[in-house]
Image: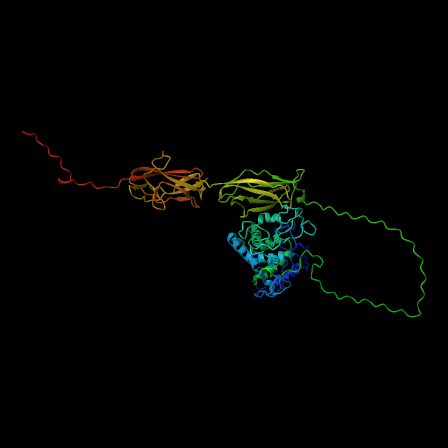
Length: 590
């Protein structure tokens, strides 16, 4: 076990009752969301609530072992530890969190507050999980960019006391090509990191051994499924989904409440290391009570002179040599449903296409089968969206895990298209075993409209050299509903038959005030309304056409009229009414 967290640790086991008592004591004045009875214990109803995950679900860590030490019950004192290097033991120094590790937790919580504000993720929950999973990255033994000085690996998940998870990453993360192992300061198994991994320090890669990446990934993992961590029931589901254990739940909760009462920054590498682990079974599962040993009875001396000499016994016959026992064969483990899956295949998914912003009409379905073609029920299929897209599953996630039904089929949640158009892939993978993935191609097309109408009916007229009094306003619809965010183009034409913009007549103005007769990049608002800029007229009179077209082919033609300006009649000189007198006739000479 030397490779696991750097040294072999002995377990000071913690029962649910002990951990729950610590949570209750810590939360008496600081955590109103924790239910405790009059004896400062978590209520039975609380402990028996049905969690979202199942015991068979390995969660984020593959149900790997974790540190079981509880925080002290006294309030943490915000005084930095003067100790240089990792230390052990309890006390207020346990409230100190290594600087880089603390920064990673707080930055991850800030990012989640912006991207998923409804989750209400407290950074203290990340700190609690980091403490329980790796002792804050082995007391903060990280480089300046947050990468652990050496990899943190959990035990081999070969089913011997842990989950049974065969290799899913070809050893890329954990170096084991036979079985998986939990990795990094937040102890993700490779199959979970494959979809949950995030780049938290902006170096362009997601590294499970980097505390910034791991903390951000843990935050997104805890904030999936629409959970609101300010709600008690959702908080429990999220923690149990990380490691399905009531002991784990209460240990994490106790540390979270402890950190909520106050913490402080300490130098990297100087954090306290926990001393007990859940996988050390050399000590009892509950705190032992010292037992006073019974005194060894002192033999009474025999009375002199009363003993009789012993009669020599009959020599025993040599015994028959015993037949050596045959070694007991190691039982072959019963294969799990996951072990029987030979391949995945498409279960009849239709063409996946949707307009931007719409929900895909069809859903992805994948079937798990044995080598004989029989369906395999109760195995988990992980669906992951891959590619340059902002499409998501219901709930805003880029991944979803679904358990196959009796027919071996897993039906993915509905896909919702984002604003990015183009193709992307949804990949279906078997969780817990490496089999060939099934890829589904999905396409997002631009938003469209199939009809355009004017919102008013006022005639659009203007005198030459002037400005139209009314702006043109249109409404786009698609199948009768408002078509929001649809691209449109407006063009000014000499006539309805023209196909290109004219160089005279009505015009718009660009940013510098110059005339333009074609506007591109227009877009309807959320209600499908498009209001065009002001229109002006040059000195050309007549009837013109404004044509507006949208993505999807909707077209509307609007007539524009430019009239000559009104003018007064000039008065010629030389006549009473100002008109020019006719030229005088010249008489022929006599």
